Amino acid sequence: QQHIENYDDFLMMLDENLDALLCSHAQAHLASTRQGAALNRICNSMITNYTGAKLRHGAIAFGVLAKHMALSAEAMLLVFVHTAIRDAFSAAVRLGIIGPLAALPLQAKVFRHFAHTSAISHVIPYTEKHSYDDDTHLFSASSAPFLDALHASHSLLDMRLFQS
Image 1 (cartoon, rainbow, N blue to C red):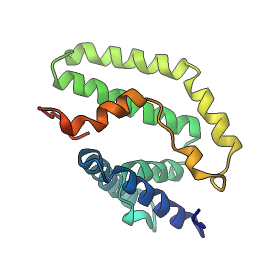
Image 2 (cartoon, rainbow, N blue to C red):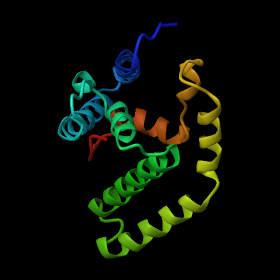
Image 3 (tube, one colour):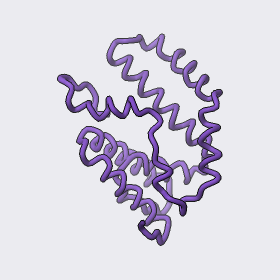
Image 4 (cartoon, rainbow, N blue to C red):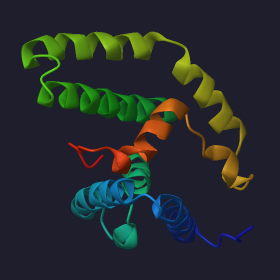
């Protein structure tokens, strides 16, 4: 158990833990660090005296940006879900599974469905009841273990189309 002195130390600990988690999967590590570099550039331009420039991973920089923008936990989850849904439909369009004109209304429908389900309502009460001083491992969880298994096998595929 690491002792956390301040917020910057906490961010660095999260970033180091994520780096250790992704070090065995080169593609996931590369995608995460590229997202982190892009989000760090945004943070540098939006946040005065931004100290997180050493953060390497997108998930951590995303959290810093959401905190700076004073997004509620629900809004942050909706933004995260929106980007995940958009990325999935973008990949489907690039693969020719669906056309761009058909993808846009379908993407909106999927997002509206998710936004009105109770999935977010299960996450918010848990994060409000527990502080970050509690066991931090309780905050790391996968909501899609099958996708995680596929993602971990991405480097074994004969043909890899995307880095993420």
